Image 1: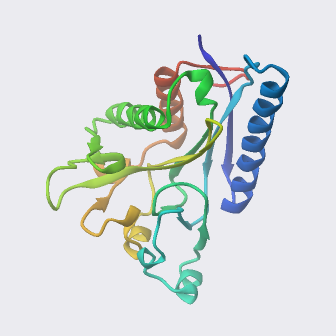
Image 2: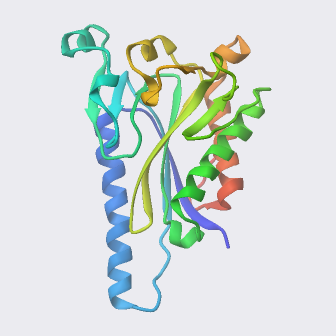
Length: 238
C-alpha cells in the first residue's frame, strides 16, 4: 500500500525558519500517533507525511555527534562569508547548505512504511543514486560513511554529492538530505565536511561541466523518492 505524502517546495528559505516549520509538522505527526495509540492500543490511523524541498541561504549546520573543530571559521569570518551557523538535533557531523542545493526534509512515519531507520537512509541514498544517474553520474555508497559518493574507494578521489542526516522519534523522521546541484562548493573549504579530512565534495554542475535546471532535478528526485518509498501525493504536484 502506498504511503500518502503532502509535497511542498518552499523555495529559498532561511534555515531557522524552515527548521521551525518542519519541527512543527514533525511534532504534529508524533502527537497524532500518540493520541491514536492511546485511543486504539492495538492499532492507529495512518496520517499523511510531508516531503519538503527547500534551498537555504549560506549556512553551516552541526549535528549531535559532530565536533565544532570541523568548522574552520570563527564568528567574524562567518559573517564575512555571509554565512550562518547552527547546532541542530540531527545525526551526523557538519555540513553546508546554500543556493543551488536541493535540501529535502521527509517527515515520514516509518511504521506505516514498515521499515527501520537504517533501511530509510538506504532508500534515500538509492533515490539520489538513481537521480544522479539521470545525468550520467555514477554514484555509490561509502562503507562507514552515510550519504552518496563518487569513487568512494579511490584514495584522493572520493567525493560526496549528497549528505544525509536525520532525526527520528516514535519512528517519525525529520531533517534529511542535501543534494549538491549547482552549489558554490568553495564554502566546503571552510569545514571538514561530515567530519572527513581526506575526502572531497562535488555537485552535478562540477561533474557534468554545466549548470543543471533546478526544477528538472527536483522533479527527478521527487519521482525517484516516490519509487523507492512507494509514495502517493495527497496534493496536486507537477
